[in-house]
Image 1: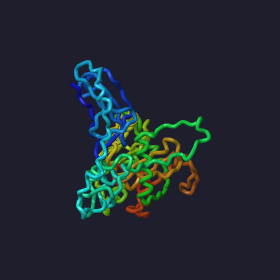
Image 2: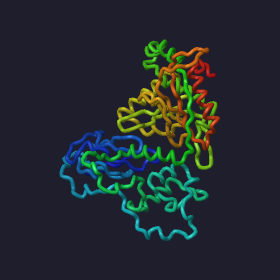
Image 3: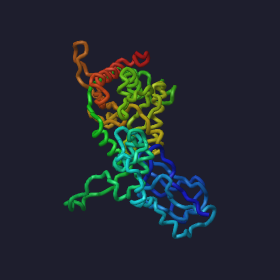
Image 4: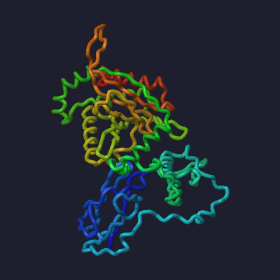
Length: 411
């Protein structure tokens, strides 16, 4: 009996994936829960395991192909030697056949001429943007012409694949003079998603950046004095990130607009603090989220960041690890960056950029002294955050870092 192995549910708003790598081939014998392939989504790479023991009867899709959630990946001949697979198994295509153009014709004449995507929910807007579904192709079922995610999916299934506009750069206009000395590598789904999201942030947000600098003397002295005792007691290294997470939360509590987001014509103020920490991974830049960071002590923050960093390096981050952040911290200083303007992580309205610590001459008590200084950058959405709020937020972070006892006393 041939058992179908299908694309599992991949999380909210994730409807398709790319077969990044097959770990088996037709004729291979597999055990229950043995990894069969790796699927790359917009956010993470996940493994699909065998649900039964048996022999791979055939692979339904090739590496690099896109598959829909619920689509067939392969067939397993349960319990026996199924190497001789029926030829009919292999051609199973993951792409649904386009609906006939005449099928939806009986729609009422008074139906809305397209959806009001601007006023629709974020899931519907995001899916329409990612799939290139025009508003005119969507029959909305929500109030005032608003579309739901289901409306977008219905529209997507009725559009032939060739008709859907693809968000990709224009093809080269002619032969490249040094093509023999170039290498072409197809962008991964994650890299394409990063590119689209960052460009979308530039196109939709009124993004500005404000700067300040912070004297790291007090934090560095505190860390040097207590780092060994901290590691012995908690089993985690005391880094600078926990100080900045605590300082940012103090600023977010005083200036809630920096922790909010715009949804349609409303501002959503969040009374929780899920802090995204940007980290590099073999697949690209990812932003895992430290949940309820305000409820964690320094040890909890350091352990949480350490765990997320290891999962990112090992490719083990789940979709839950990457969704729902309210504010992001990016530390370009670990790569030697002295100053930069970080880009927003939509739909968040603020991101803090940390940078390299460098000795600089500063006037202290009327004398010039060398101090370990760091530039801070806050990029923010000016539609929701005023310049005054952005500057005050950075000043609060600066005060907490330069006088870390404030973090302990909550002042």
